[in-house]
Amino acid sequence: MAKSNAEKVKEAEEALARKYEEEVLNRKAKAGLHTDACTTPLKMAKGHMRRKPLIKRAICQKCGKIFKTNRNTKFCFKCEKMK
Image 1 (cartoon, rainbow, N blue to C red):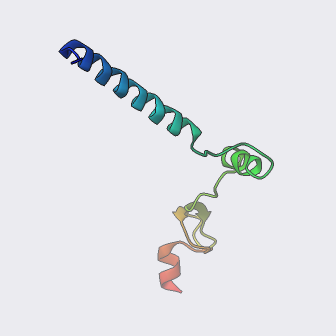
Image 2 (cartoon, helix red, strand yellow; image 1 turned 180 degrees about the vertical axis):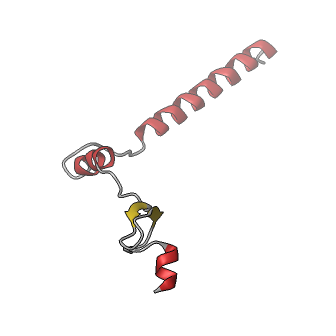
């Protein structure tokens, strides 16, 4: 017996719905990052650790000028140049 067009469309829709349900289950079943003893310190460190600033404020020992630098120096640029 031949199937009507409406029955064919209904079967195709059901097959497509089953396919999408299987894809959803596969996505949920994939491995993710689980919280356990080895990942907890990493997560805590991200929120609590602060980085040191690269640029720091310094006072020249020769002239007393306040300047910002990323180097470990005791003199400003002018006084360092005059040395």
